[in-house]
Length: 228
Ligand code: TIU
Image 1 (cartoon, rainbow, N blue to C red):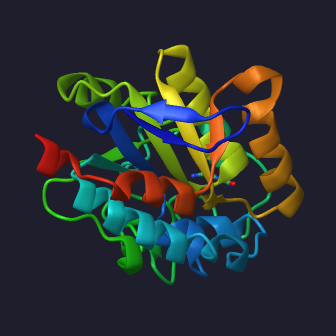
Image 2 (image 1 turned 180 degrees about the horizontal axis):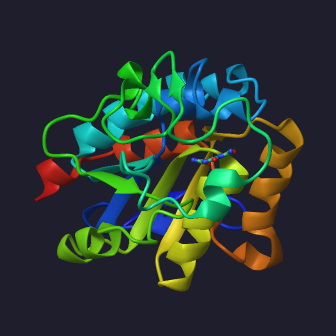
């Protein structure tokens, strides 16, 4: 077992039953011309997560833990996009509209894919999800069950939307989640702070909040591959 300093208490995990979840680090959220910017957001707010997450990915891969990526998006015919999601608000471009990186939030388009800095490596599952949560209408739960995963190290964007929804869904399913504060990002600084506070409040009502440097230190001691 490993232990990491975290809020509201130290987080303990067994590397053999723990996965790193990288949520929606897609061009559509992190680069200009995509879904995030169409909603009126400044994508620069999210980009500070890239260097610590890249370092964490290197450490987690070296330690032999499972890594799972997710992508939010829809089929080209929009059959999996509820009208409520498609028509909500007044974005500059709607889901499915053409943009500089292809159709907004559509599977198979350049903008829908994961940013180059965090590209998945061979063998790492990429879960495509139509909603904000990573469990709704996806194969995530069976992927985790097949691998005997019980603990999730959660990273990605955005903190109060897809990260929160996924952590709440995971918590209800019995997974223990550590959210890495420097590896999750919001377009709104106040939502970042309060979103993280909400997870750790009330004795860790949804999970724990920690920092990637502490986690990398905990993983460094011995790798799963060496100890198995
Ligand atoms: N808009 C926003 O903050 N987020 C999303 O729409 N999706 C995710 O968080 N991935």
